Length: 130
Image 1 (cartoon, rainbow, N blue to C red):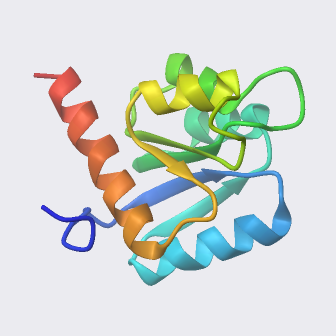
Image 2: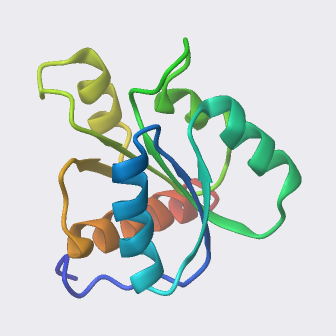
């Protein structure tokens, strides 16, 4: 399906983004698609949510966060569908590593691109469990 035609089941999304302005903008896009959103500003906060909140459907995380750990560390932490996002340049090693692991968004992105990336993360996760 095309990016505009991608469908994603509505669910609870953990949004990991340290920039308050970006977090609000992305949260609004997710909510417009019918998702409920829990916000975290670090991997530590995301881990706490993942460990304590049932029924999380997706994780959407920036790569570059404050602290030593990056959004890429979530790959080892959760089995949930994970989409990574960044505004890092394409030649940055973190950008390249995120792009290679599947569902990925380069900021800024549209609501359609967000929907398509969540669908890709879900499909990637389904394939990993078959």
